[in-house]
Image 1 (cartoon, protein in one colour):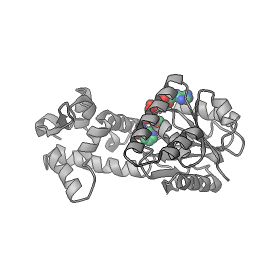
Image 2: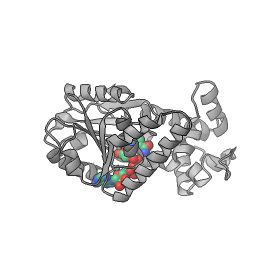
Image 3: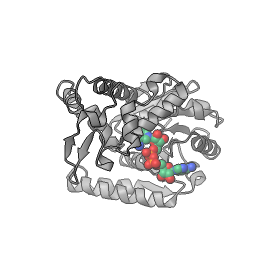
Image 4: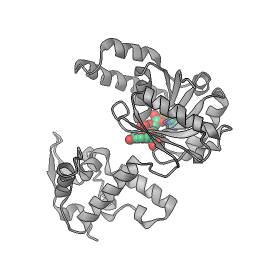
Length: 302
Ligand code: NAD
């Protein structure tokens, strides 16, 4: 199937950039949101980000102008869906919202359209039965920031057809991304599961008094070639984000190893969420310069 028009639902951190990735690749792209102000914010954020890219010589002005000409922001979901070949839902991470959206998209989109979700933790089989086309439903999982990160996970649900997987792989390639195919659903998918395993091990080593936050990060950078260590990365993305994801997974699985660690829970309870609060695994000054904290302050010993 040829994809000409991509509809992205949700104009937040992910949806806005996914829409622009599609427009930059030459596709007609529409971004919708339930909240009109979110569309204005997304438009402004993209314009400022792409202006910086032009200033730094990363993109040509004509390329960016042509992409904005192909990108439309609107609140009318049914109208936008009526001509969509491929829908990428990137709305708020709530199952009830996603199921209602998929039911609405199923009614409004042409019969050939694929309905994908960008959800990081909700597998598509929990949504597919809200539609009459479960074979055309899958996860298409981008990474943040979507304009930069190359990997896109294509996750096949039990009802997803081969044609849907093939079209999704082809779309990811057309967007200049590198598709990674998951032949069956698993919460967290591939990349985030590996990231979580590394995080869990880093916290295990800290809580058992083996090494400090700084030295564990240093080992990951200098021995394993990671661009940043697991503690640095948690501080950057927000310690609360990983905490909530683990809590959600624990609620679903009941497996004690999915429970957030005591050190993470203590940091979240104290509002020490990383760079955004000036404190997390490290302390940060106004200029964002990092200093290590004493291990006793951040580690709840096992
Ligand atoms: P966000 O909170 O930045 O944006 C969500 C947007 O959805 C908001 O603009 C909100 O107004 C809109 N929205 C809410 N209900 C809606 C509805 N019924 N119809 C249309 N729009 C609606 O969220 P985000 O970080 O962009 O995440 C969006 C999705 O992408 C989630 O499913 C998340 O799991 C997934 N994801 C996020 C990341 C990340 O790092 N943030 C990475 C990969 C995948």
